[in-house]
Length: 144
Image (cartoon, rainbow, N blue to C red; front, side, top):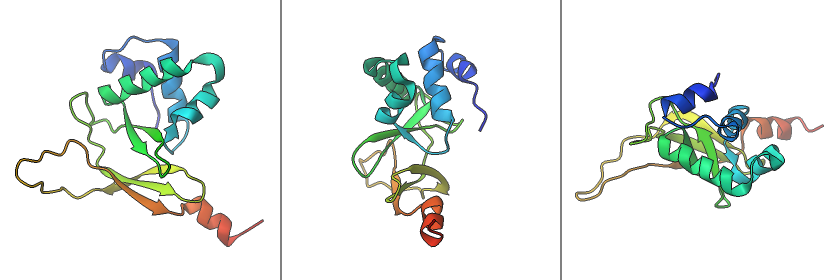
């Protein structure tokens, strides 16, 4: 997916800063979700921990990123679909957490609509499958 960070910031009425652009660029580089600690390592001294935390929270609030908790309880972030907004995330898809490499993939598998009991309102639905990803399966079949 080709990502234009400056345009995304404009569309969400966010000030264009070097740090905000860098975070989006870094997240868009890979096809898997990335954790805050991983982002901190990749960005080095460019962005301090507090600023990164604030940027990630702002992006989540604005519907730019969605958060996925991994099997260790660490928050990971992935780019939202274009239908997400500040008012509602539309990322009701299955996440896959590889138990070998720990990477999290957003799969194009739609989570079925849930019929909530009377008086309950679901704001977000998360479905995570755990197992071995395609790359780890291939490595297991063809060890070096």
